[in-house]
Image (cartoon, rainbow, N blue to C red; front, side, top):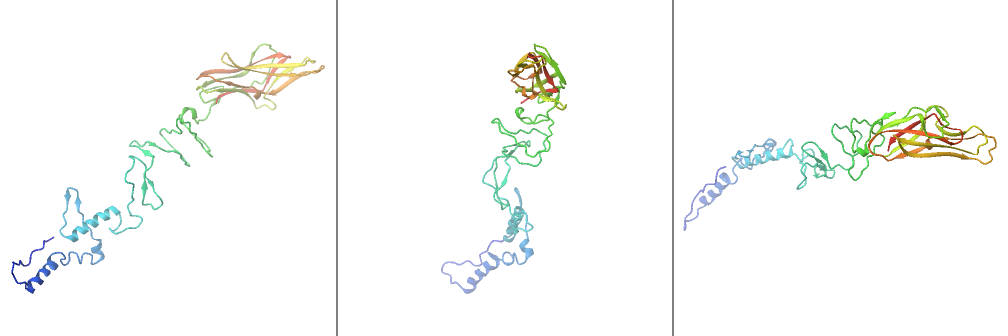
Length: 330
């Protein structure tokens, strides 16, 4: 851009002539501030209005040769920032998103209000190794993960799964005290398994001392949580009972005792008894559901054999009819 040159120099005492006075103004108009084609005609049409000029990179700047050229460089930067087809395109799809004055490193940005132009900080962090932290409540219709998924925290937060059709887990799921896995069943099972014995069929004994009930034994590996031991019926119709039986007639009391053992340790005893005055010569029998026997064992982690024993205390025999022993950790 050319500098303004002085048209005429006046000295002290000179007479100012019209030609000199007017010529100075013509010089300013034609060669100085408003030269023809430099500003006045810079946007004489749409093509000129859309014109841009690359100012170059930092350290490799391209100096403008005129005021119009410098304006085109400014338009170039505006167009690059807006992302629009033209530098003056301010449609909603190209207006830059505005964020806060500062943010948390690696935090996930969230839209602020519904304009689509404002973002805000969040407490959800994705670090440089793609680990996500800071999530509070998560609602999703599908979750698939190949890494570690930690649910809840040391305060004991709960995990709720609603309307799930299936849960498939190939390894430990969350905290060991809140595992969600398929529980194995059988006569010998590992941690989280449910020990279920074979059926006792119709077992009967006249022993007055404790004897093992046939088949009512399971091997259970525990993680240290309490273990429940009880009886369930097998598939036989009318099965699933325990009984104290007096066959000789005329008795007034019939009683059978049962106990559960962990290996050789007695973990609990239970009695069923029926007392009738004036029974005459009638037999005195008592049948109750096998599930009425319920034992709770607080034991440390390990592998144990749980079984049921019984004896007749008063009467002729005790019975266990078509029951299975079940043992599992809470």
